[in-house]
Image 1 (spheres, rainbow, N blue to C red):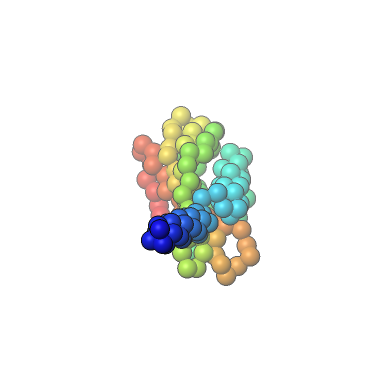
Image 2 (cartoon, rainbow, N blue to C red):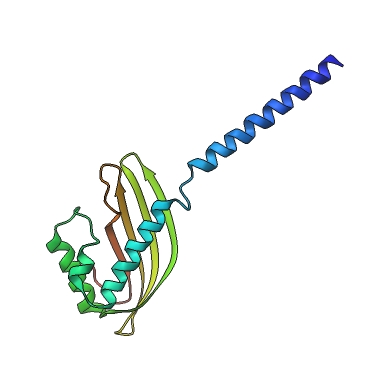
Length: 150
């Protein structure tokens, strides 16, 4: 009888420990984090600026990991090769936390007025060192006939 009580107590302890571990693990996940929404808003505003062909406004969403001139050349290359953004559709996101901040990776399906379609990946970085919004650190375009500069 005494052994049954000990075994029952051990099971409760194990279940409680397992439950707490699962709660901690789930709370550590970054899916659905508030920063992801801020990152998606940056991505949406970037594409809206590109729809309006406002390269200056679009440039404001890029990080300083490249010079503004390099980013401008990138945007001018997109406009010359593909045209202006006609329509964009969010597809999926992924969030990766690193010691220095978070990376938000967003995939979009983008239709250009040239009739070309592209699968685009925007990677935004939100540094723990700044109170600023997430910024575009990488922009990869997969479209037939598109030759990236970066």
